[in-house]
Image (cartoon, rainbow, N blue to C red):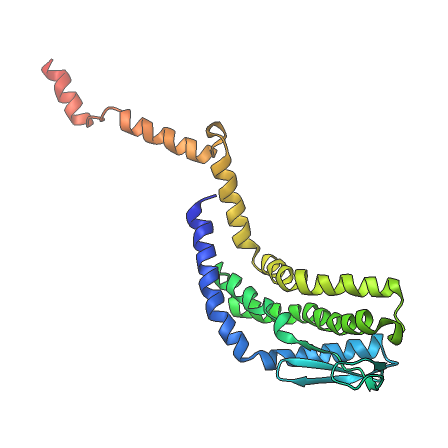
Length: 234
């Protein structure tokens, strides 16, 4: 693969990421609002017995529960308090500027429309990370008091790791590939052409080279009138 194609793309991606990240950070509290709604819908559906809603303060989302546990930080020993875990949207939302940078670096067609589609498609993955961050704090720290079994604690821990370490970067890259397959196809084709042996070169390129050789070696054609005059003189 040509270094100019891949190297230019990587340099543009880094540059656009440096541009998109501050913009996303400035509007992150507004970008977290639909995630708050999704988390509220998920908690009411999956855990209707002990969830009381979701509060947003800046980019911090807090799950309100009716769970009463002992040993919360900042409380007197032996006291019982209501558990309300919190999570920061910034940890899970940075896939949006990454997706925008990839689309702009690849010079995709209709980039802003694809950014909007990607922003909506990323919402479930961001909500996944937020919800399992809450569940991780509840299940792993206060599991026996909250009624979590060892198996459910292991599942929550795995889902939390997947939502924190994998989804924030994998989801935007997968969406970029789905939204802009033209650029990836171009890179694959150019890599195949460069790695192909000379005898398997393009037939069109071989025919063009042969035609150029014939043109270069052919003798100049004399006009008919000049050829006739030369025959009479002889």
